[in-house]
Structures are given as structure tokens and as C-alpha cells.
Length: 479
Image 1 (cartoon, rainbow, N blue to C red):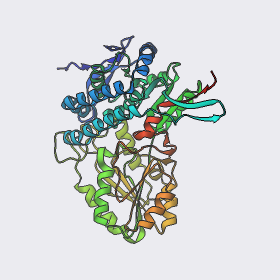
Image 2 (image 1 turned 60 degrees about the horizontal axis):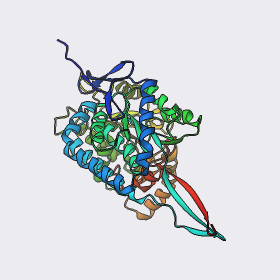
Image 3 (image 1 turned 180 degrees about the vertical axis):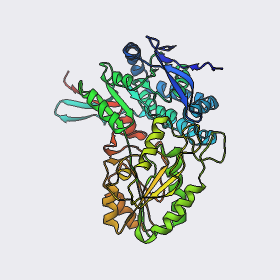
């Protein structure tokens, strides 16, 4: 007996609607591997309609006072808190994440981040006015850029949606947001919540695939395109946006080095690194998945890390003992399996290295040692619960290995030597350097990378500034 699939819909101009041509895609629960819903496969007509709604809403939203925008975002944050259990259920069905961790590790930061940007809405200011030429006064206006096209990823569908819309809307922009085609459910629910608070057209959601995202990036209406995704997707968006010189905001892949020196407390380091590497099944651009350990403690460290992996549990969302759930989709499971299948002969699988169960997309916590700098699994992002281990002999070699990848998003240093930590934080070519910890983020501090990890910042006043433009105004004193 077949079960009728739930129907998700786009949210455009204050109304839920199907794709104009009626096309849909199936949405699969990664715990079971079975479809539970359909979502619109939006085409050009849908993108046009969403952009038109956002463009129509922009002048009114731009021109209200910052205090009014703040009040609206604070109401959004309150509404998310009130409907947290609905959002958790949608996100868990989207992703297979543990229910308890979704409740404690995602909802509170989301609400905090929205409230942070609600406050930032009232800090939209330029530098003080002054006379820099006789008889003339100059001042600087900081303004919203306009309509923002935004593409969110599947690893943190709810939270990344917040990272996109909160600073944009706080700054006075309007938004057309596309969730990943594999995880639209929680974003559609967010549209319902935001739609109950914000004026019509300020926030719009268009579901679809890569082609839908391409249409958004190429559309003539947006002043800015923001994407969190793969390097390939970011490069394609940048190329599309370049045709009419749109602003681009890119948060792309990562390959975070975790540099462990010989004076480190091994037990504490292993505990922190294993959680930061396996959390969310390693599906995090900042995950602690590339360990560089001093040769003098290598064997002890690997033994401890392998045991931590063996003790780490993956399983169903309602199991309170699990750290992470399944990989997001069948393609991602095949990607992770491919990396392990292609390991060179000198590599050693110390723990895991296999699929768990025959239903859904679960993969065991995995540790691989004996690797060299030019190995594929060192150079490319796995995006799974796989931690690699290399050795280094001295600080210079550690820096060379750490920086020797095309990504530059996040990194960490583990040492008791303060001077060494400061030297490493200067030399590591990454947008974030953690010291004796890995993965904490706060709304007040910027998140973003260099090199092929993209450019632009999420969170913080820097992330807020990215959604504004600067205008010089000069007036004659003699008029």
C-alpha cells in the first residue's frame, strides 16, 4: 500500500503556491531512504514571480525605520522559539539528525543570531560628517543593496537559512531564498513563520534544483547572490553573476587542519577533535577532519582517536545516545564510500570505514592514518564522518601541510605553548583559527574563508555590512 506524500510548496509574494508548470521532485528521508514529500521543481516563471514580489516589496522595507525592522525580526525570533518543536520535526525529517541535539544545538543559536541581527538593524550608520573641502560637507550613507538571491545548503538547512535571511532583512533588503532540493521542509515552515510577521514579499522561498539556483543567479533583478555550497557551485554562481556585475557572497568548502603538538593533553584533544569531526556526520565545512599530529605522539594519539571513533554512535534520531545521524542523501553516501574505496596502499583504516545497516545512509565513524600530503583524501573535502591523520616533525612542516590545500575556511591548534599558538594563528591561512578547541561559533564573530573557500562573511557586524552599500553625499554650505 502506497502512502500519499506530503506536498511542500513555494512561498512567493505572501502565498504558498506550486511550481507554475506543476513539476515536482521527491524529498527523501535519509534515515529510511524513502520519499516522504514532494517539493516544487521551480522554473523560470517561478523565479520571475519571486523576484518580482521581492522587488515590489523592497522600497517599502528599505524605507521603514531600523527600529521597525528590529521589532519585526525580534517577533520572528519569538515565533521560532514558540514553534521550535515543529521546526525540529521538519529538520529531523529533512536530515535524520538526532532530535535532542537539534533542539539544543540549532534552535538556540538560530534564535540568538536573529536577535543579534535585529540589534544590528539599528547600527546602519556611516562615518561622521565633515568638511574635507572648503564650503562643502561630506557624509556617508550606508544603504541596503536591494533584492538578494540566496541559496542555502543541505547540511544545516534551518540554521543556514537564518545566516542568509537575518542580516539581509535586518539591513533593509528583501530576499528570495532557495533551499537545497534534498532539504526544503524546514525552510518552507520558516517561510510560514516569517510570513506571519513580515510584510508581503520581503521573504520568499523558491524550491528547486541546480537549474533553479542558476536561474536565480542569472536573473536581472537581484543586486546580490549569496550561496553556501560546494566550490564548484560557488564558481558557477560567481561566473553567472559576473555577466551583470552582481555582488557575490560565497561560503564554500573546507578542509580544516587540526594541528596537534607534542605538549597537548592527548585525552582532551581527542575528546574535542572527535566530537568536532564526527558531529553532524562530518557534514560541516569547518569539521575537524584533517588532523596533523607531531610524530612523537602519533601512535598514542591514533590509538586514542580510533577508540573514540569506535565509541561514537550513529543511529536513529530518537536514540539519545547517538552523536550523529545519516549522511544526507544517497549521492553523498556514495561520495564518502568512494574516498575510502580509493585509499592508497599506504593508508590504514584504524576504525570504521564502512556503511552501517542496509537502510538509510548511515556511515560509521572512521579514522584513517598513514596518509601523505598529496593523497586525494587529504586534498579533497570528504564531507562525511571521516577523520584523517598525518604526522609532522616541526612547526614549519605543520604550517606547510596545513596550508597546503585549496581550501581556507577554518583550522585549529592544540598546544599549551601560548607563543606557539600565537605564531600558528598568524601563519595559518584560514578564516578562523581555534586554539585548544574546534567548531564553536558565536553571532558576534565573523565566519568565512579565503582561497577556494570563498569570500564574504556570515554572522557578526562584518556579515551585516556585506548586505549594505556605501554612498557618499556632498552638499554645499553656500546653498
